[in-house]
Every structure is written in structure tokens, then in C-alpha cells.
Image (tube, rainbow, N blue to C red; front, side):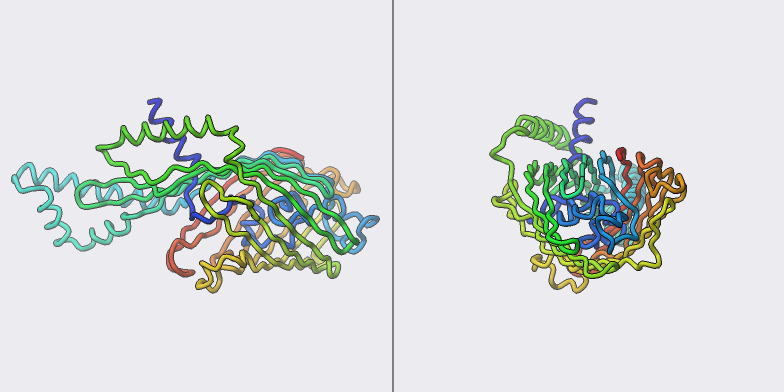
Length: 416
């Protein structure tokens, strides 16, 4: 039982991704609006997308400090602890259904083999020849990704200053149905832990820059193939790897240091332009060479939609050209384009105190990330408890639209 628990825990807390992928923080708010956020960054999300956005904290909605951005809900600071999880639940359901169908087929073939004395392999081949629909089920089950994600964050942001500690975990094994013996394969899975912080500086009320530094540690496990015959050895291997990760957690030599840079320009009261260069690591991260992320974006916030009273309303429309240095995906026309819109509305408040007491507020958003639709919603209670949900898709194939994997993520946050 102990070994089984360790195996499950290790799988949930591990991450599988491409070799050159930097540690990725999944912001529910940003993912909801297609991850178009480099020019939005009006709260703690500036830590992850553009440190220059820290200049907006305690200035939005403050006419004395920034009159050209008056029509926004005012935010004084952000301090949050977040816990969330995600996965492609549609894949879970279809994988379960396919597994049941295949299990029933194996059981029927096994019984027939006992009754007739014909080898089970021959009966399997005959069954597949007589029922081609089973081949389709077998193919859909074969190499079926069943990824799981876990995120934990601790965030603190003031005007011109912010930082966070966060963990992103993901495991994406696939199942090979085979003809005789199904087995589970995990190419690579790992856990990313990141500590980061940065500052912003206002040259003028319209233009600011930001810079941040981060330390990242990645724990990886290489390819593992598991079937009924080697389950015990795989279990022992994972337990050993968990022990190694625990002993290596304070080894500073395995920490990779990186930097983030950003600029933000408030062109008009309604239009904001942002640019960020993130994930500039000075050495490999657990053997992976990380490609920096260069992103430019715009955000438009129509004045007539925004209200800066106790019942505040904020409306954003954003578009990013993301990850410009990722040449490996240039054959995907829509891969670099993110687009989204969001509306936040205070539903219950203490009138006249300009957002100081916000009993209930809600946010809805939608967009496109890399050519796939995204959406999300959130509810904030007493400015302390926040419940959020988002869905987006990631491309697993060669081009946009070939092999969509839709992710659903939920998160609960506590703070101010």
C-alpha cells in the first residue's frame, strides 16, 4: 500500500513536456483569455508576464497618481496562496471507455481460448479481422496521453515590487494497448519549482520598465515502461527517484538562474502596449537548454465599459504575438497568436468606499490560444477567497488542428 501511494503521488507531482520548455506558470486569469496578457498585467500576474505591470498596482482607479487610467477598479496590493489542478478530462473518459471495451474483448478471447484450446493470440487476430471497429478502438487507445497537472503558488505584489514561489507539476504517460499485453509508458516526467521576484520603475506616468530574477530547479525521471511483469521494479525506481529528489532539494548547484525583462507603455487612457523577454536562463535546466520567450502585446480597455465606483467594472481586450523565438513551431500559423477578452464586475459592495469593501465580484473571459478557443470564470468573495476555472487546448500534433488536447483547470485562492 505504501509503495502504491508513493507511485501515485510521484506521478501526480511530476511533469512531462518538451525538452526546451521553460517552467510554465498557468495563470487561470490569463489562460481564460487565451494567455494574451503581456499588456494587461494590472495585478500580481505581472510577476509572470511582464514585471513592468507592477507599476499599475495602486495606480489603477487612483486619479491623483494616474488620471489617464482612472476608469479601473483600484487595487492596493495582491497577496495570494493558490492551489489548483488540471487535466484533459475528456481523454480520461474516452480512455476509460476504451479500456473497458478492450478488457471485455480480452476476457471473451481468453474464455474462448480455454474452451477451444486455440492459442489466444490467434483468436485475437481473428477477432480483430472479423470486427474492424475494434481496430479503431485499439488505435484510439494506443498512445493515449492521460496527463495530469498540479500547481501551487505563493504570491505577493505591491506597487513596483513583487515576487512568487510556485510549483508546476505534470505527468503525461501514454498507454500502448498492444495485441497481447497492454503497458504504460512515460517518456519523461518532472517537477519544476521556481522562486522569482522583480521590480518596476516608472520613467513617466505612461512608460515603465521591469526586471526580475528567478531561480528554478527541475527534477526529472527518464523513460519508464510498466506492465504487469515489471510493476514492482518500476515502483522501486520511482521510490528511489523521490528519495533522490528529496536529498537534492537544497543542492544549489542544480538551480538554474534566469532573468525576465519587460516594458509597458500607456499610449492612451484606453490603449496599452507591452513587451517582455522572459526565461533568459544562464545555464541548462536539468540538462534542458531553455529558449527565451519574447512576446509583444496590446490591450484595449474601452472607457465606456469601465466603472470606478464601489460597483466597479473592468473590461479588457488583448492580443499577443507570443514566444517569437520558438522557431520549432513556425509551421503552425496560429501558434504564436493569442487573443482574449474579459470582464470583471463587482456584484456586492459597500457603496461609496471605492472598492475598499468588495463583498462579491465575478470575472468571465474567453479567447483563442494558439488557434484553439479558451474560456474561464472566477468568483471572489470578500476579497479573500477566490474560486476560478479555465479551459484551453494544447497542440500535440504537427500542426494546429491536428491533435488537440483540451485542458480543464480549477483553482482556489486565499489572500487579499
